[in-house]
Amino acid sequence: MEHPDFKTYLKQKKIDPKSFASAEMERFMELKKVFDLVHPNSFTAQKLFLINAIRRKYPLQEEKEVAVARKPMAKPKIVKPKTN
Image (cartoon, rainbow, N blue to C red; front, side, top):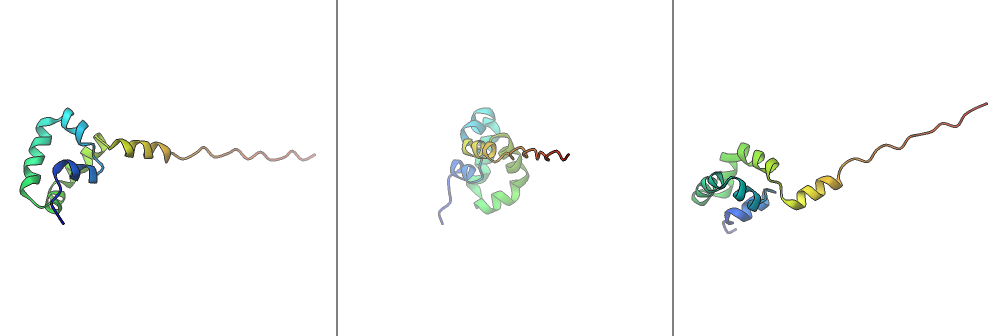
């Protein structure tokens, strides 16, 4: 399997690379340098804590839409008939 580029890797991890890069270019470039030097699995193992925090901060747009769609519905009220 070929080594993915950093933006593709971020998308696989459900991180929006555009919003991440525009908001935190210095951190983005710092992580990209490390990513380019090591295997993706090694990068994930080393930076898992950061990846999870970045994912929560910059989720892919599709993930936001899916998350909204998955919100639980309100439980219907059960009305008991009156007994005389």
